[in-house]
Image 1 (cartoon, rainbow, N blue to C red):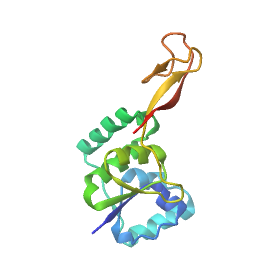
Image 2 (cartoon, rainbow, N blue to C red):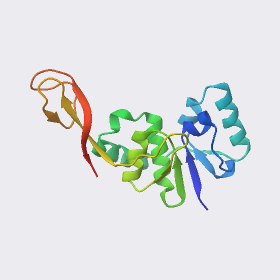
Image 3 (tube, one colour):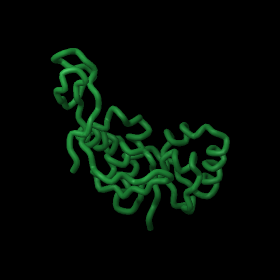
Image 4 (cartoon, helix red, strand yellow):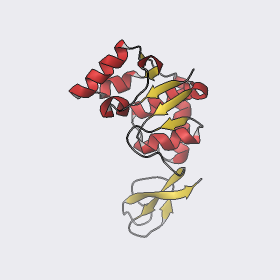
Length: 160
């Protein structure tokens, strides 16, 4: 049986044709859904069997490691990390439903199947880096260039 790990986009966009009894989400997603229509979709899904579960802490740590490797960690919220952890727990029999590109990048790196809700799916796996807008030197991380003091801008380091 295939389960679907639901990010908040499932309830916000409302164009997901998945049986609610096959949906799993996390408390952080429930907290993010505030708009009246999205809240109604969430409540209907809960009545239909949507499961709300906490992610396992060791899975959250694995997600943080991979997100640090891809350098998506600064882009991901606590809820993003937790939804990825829940998807990793069910990796062999689940599909992650999300439109977030940073979430997709980390998920695909970990072998988690992803299905977007309203956006296109990512095409390339990306490792991010930083480039100084002043002296143009490249760095792995940081906000300010240690050489000239200019801000660092996120850039594609390489595609996998």
